[in-house]
Length: 119
Image 1 (tube, rainbow, N blue to C red):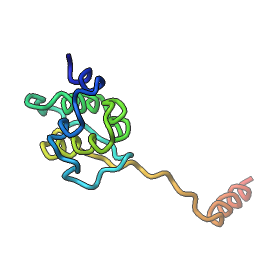
Image 2 (image 1 turned 30 degrees about the vertical axis):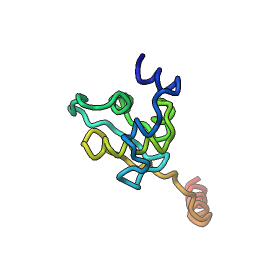
Image 3 (image 1 turned 90 degrees about the vertical axis):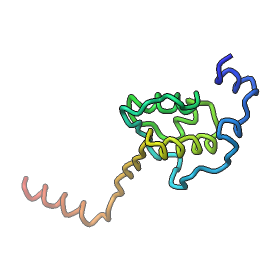
Image 4 (image 1 turned 180 degrees about the vertical axis):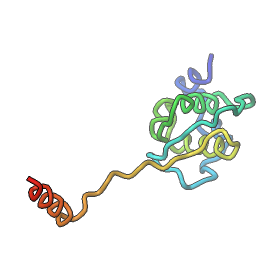
């Protein structure tokens, strides 16, 4: 029986997956933090959950929330695993680009007036 099947069957408790830790070593992770796997880092010695997490992030970046869904683990457990992988050099994080906020209407009005003046 694989670790994922044991976990689904309720045989592997979250504290076993995190080696008994309840909190990550880093507090900078939120649900939208993007995770990127570092190429070339060997996966030997990693738990099945950590290995799967790195493999999920290898093709591109995923958010913490997306990784938790793919692993079928609580976000709190996933954050502990992510912090461990960051500490070991397997993962790096990228903050997502915040959406552009519209400025005040004055600048937009000036642009519109300038375009109208060209016609």
